[in-house]
Length: 154
Image (cartoon, rainbow, N blue to C red; front, side, top):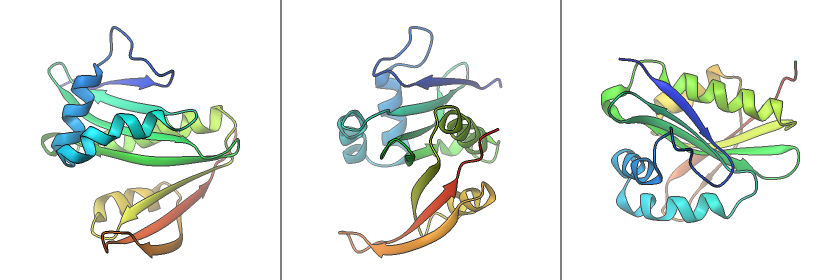
């Protein structure tokens, strides 16, 4: 299995990368059909959106989406890896590529939110240098953690 990575960051997909339909199918597979339906509209509402995608020869394996909150702050919004591709380093590589792009584009901090029950994602965030800076209960009554990381510019 050979995973290829693509970056969408100019409000259009490249001919050689996965299609929007493939991405939305993956979002629905990882999350819900409701989240898949709102995904595209939500990401397009924000400045400097990015979607890092992982694909093998046959199907999308994972994605990591985010957007600019300001000229210096980036928000890592949503991401996931299809269950059959988990535990292969794909989420780690998607996050590495996202943070590399964030640094190269002059952002100073990256923020994300995590559900307390998403232990694997929370552990990955902590391994990548995020600190828990707050928590809240969302409109559905779910506990969420707010994490933030200072970006190192090399």
